[in-house]
Image (cartoon, rainbow, N blue to C red; front, side, top):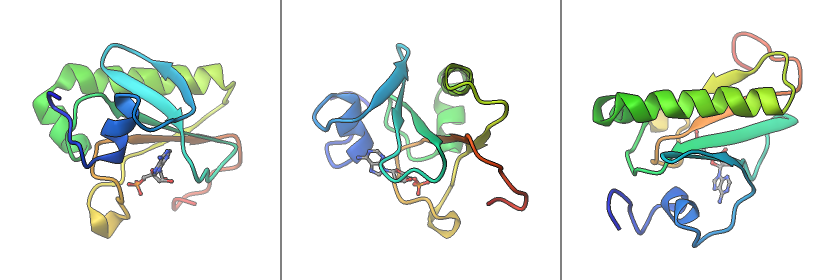
Length: 116
Ligand code: AMP
């Protein structure tokens, strides 16, 4: 596998080894529902390429980062969201638990600030 990691759960979803509720995709990104949704809409958008976090994706491929953000916006529109939050937890100290870049698309309820 190129640019994938056999130990990575999101790589295994990307190649179809682990099932996921896929809602949209592009050539370079995949969108699927989070297993533990924190809102009525909670979708993860991941690059097919294995990189550990969003900053790494920006350095490796700005085009693929733009594609992922565009796919997130398309998912939000398809879900009929008036507004949504795009979250990229980066680093264990920020509660990142899966070290394959992902964007959380969260919406469908009142979203508060500071984040909640
Ligand atoms: P983070 O804590 O920002 O790294 O987010 C990782 C997210 O991945 C969490 O919200 C998990 O619920 C979600 N997650 C972990 N494994 C899976 C899976 N197999 N399918 C869908 N979502 C998952």
